[in-house]
Length: 424
Image 1 (cartoon, rainbow, N blue to C red):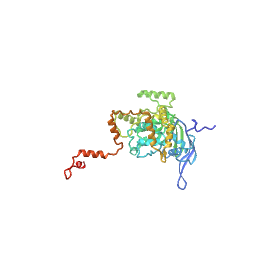
Image 2 (cartoon, helix red, strand yellow; image 1 turned 30 degrees about the vertical axis):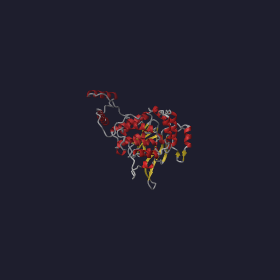
Image 3 (cartoon, rainbow, N blue to C red; image 1 turned 90 degrees about the vertical axis):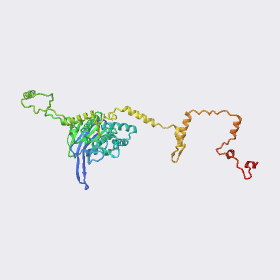
Image 4 (cartoon, one colour; image 1 turned 180 degrees about the horizontal axis):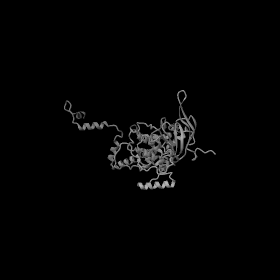
């Protein structure tokens, strides 16, 4: 019985005799980057693709993403071909080199990638805040990305790989360029995401940085698989036994050695006695923590906060509220509004006056009518004068002439009579 693509038992990635050969201009074999590689990545596991530079790790990842086509062999991602577009929204990818738009700052960069995945504005802003705090770039969020150090660019690259809350996370050399503090933070983040059920493909040549993270691994060399298995099965040395205790004096150590010789017939004994050393990474982190306790300022990236809430799966309630708010915004207008808009629609679209008419109508229905103005009572003479006033806005020239005549003195003519007397 064939399993469906949605079956939880189906591996996230299945590669069968995968081969990639790069050819030159004359179609001659130039480099065999991946040679007959077979492996599977199961759900909810941290899988390590390990090996030195040039062993085929990045080529394998590009074929998983559908960026390169295999020369031969078969490859499936979520039960589909790697070129299937529907699988892309379920994948987060941090490439070996962080290619960012240098003129954008950290917030604008994450907002851009959030739009590519179709996230709403409210959801993008919330995730950006959580991711910037998680990778320690809150203080540098408004600086252009081109001014970032390589380690800071890796941090913002990791944030963009997580903006869509992917089911399958691919990290290609994630600790390159990071200081020991950032390296420890990335390892802790990978482990935490694995606990939360993410499927992670971790590719690196820095084996010491990832041996604490992966559950299962494949070791490549020259494009071929050299070893594969669970981490403990590959790394545990069954030929030695380590005993750790509090500080012992020489006589006690000699007595223990004597007992071991007696019990084994002299075939086994204590090989070395040493005092455990503190790792340089632990010493470095201790110094950093002490400096942070003294509240010393730094212009670079800071130690990140907790894992983002949407990655921990604790934001389910908030996401439900956002969906309900979005649903309210999508409620269609009443039929009478749509009918009015259709009637007033012109060649260039709906008339903007429709909105004003509807608003004025609503205001008229809700606001109380103004009370009539109280005017003082007038007698019949005043009422008659009001009727004789001109009702239009034109100026009465006779009124202006009478005012001028009454305000100026009479001018005499040549015979000594005024104009008024001569008229009489």
